[in-house]
Image (cartoon, rainbow, N blue to C red; front, side, top):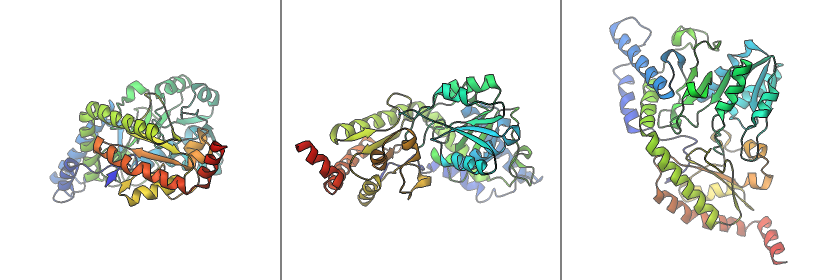
Length: 388
């Protein structure tokens, strides 16, 4: 099987499973209990919190464990709404942000959805113009899950800092793949999810800068320093810390290696398959493993099925919207036309991929595109116009 969908999820690393297993078996105790075995479990959580904090250049008391990126995003937004009735986000956010904002609009909140340019970048002048006195929060994705564009977050936080507005970034796609320093970025909150960098599903974290007035959205126990009720997922917490430590240790090497594979795949596709367009950032501000390509005259869903029958896993965009037939909201916001948006495929590479995988992909990709174009009325019309 050829796996090119690391943006959707990544395989759990063996070291992560090994670290988790004791907390699924003999070390099963509730960390809130007072007896000695439970205190050892509490120590494992504390150690994991330190690992996450060190990886982000944060303080341990600024790391809160959650069930994943979606919960972290929800908490970051809903926990700030006592500050005001206005939230600023972008048109290209993950649905973990957009659906929250759409729901808030129904409840009377004002949401500004900033536009993006043709490569998916938010303009700083648009952000500055959108800020109001009642703006409770600005939330802008660190790196887009579909097209890989990395936003200039530090430029945005310079604006929000002057206005004294908290800034949150969904960094689910970026943590473990690009260097991240929360102090340097100047963010007040940052979301991450373990399964995007070799950890288990169902566990994530939210960085909350000390002093940020974030309110709880779960009520119950006193876990996570009274800010996130619920018995801790100890095995998952150990898993996310182990996975992030491994990813951080290997980041310089893997960043260079995966980026090189990404550029190789882009070159192979664009140079050997005509009528293809790269979506997203054209320069260096792109996730190392992201390749989003539009194939003219065919539907991405059809191409995806052809690849699947050949044992290749890829995506038409966000895994959370798979099965949807409408064009990607990200590509549409970038000004990509319906035909190109419907013909888009996302290949996302990870540390497990190799140059051999790329060679094997190209052996099946080009014939699949040619076969589908041969059946396409759009392509037939194009050829007739070319001849005439």
